[in-house]
View 1 (tube, rainbow, N blue to C red):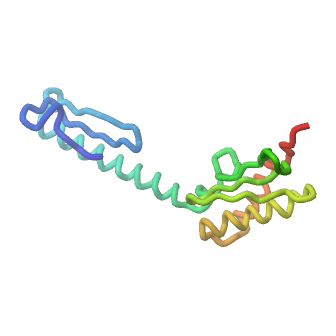
View 2 (spheres, helix red, strand yellow):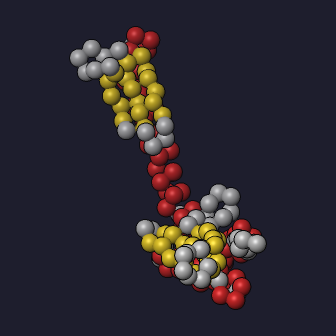
View 3 (cartoon, rainbow, N blue to C red):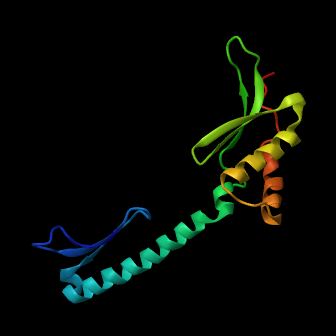
Length: 152
């Protein structure tokens, strides 16, 4: 990330502004703008991109963005059917957060209890306290998971 001379320092033709995280690679030609103006434009654009990158990082750090995807589903939560040889098959909620994973088995088709346990596990892993907004989003996300995946 930053401003650099392009193609090299010895014989530069333009200034290059590159921010890989945003997917931006822009050039400011020395022949078109002049050396001072091209450098000034490149550093101004770099400052704008640093602000955008900082905003993106701050948004990613919000707890709601850690827990919920843009479609309203919960990140790291899947409902799945597990079949293993020489063992009883079962339906469970599969959880993954911060490099840890677990499964919460749906016993006696008690989805509500398993879903509540899954919420608590995720909140504990992300070290987040439950508030009205998070509980409301969990309630809205429930529709993504209540249908059984058990094969017929």
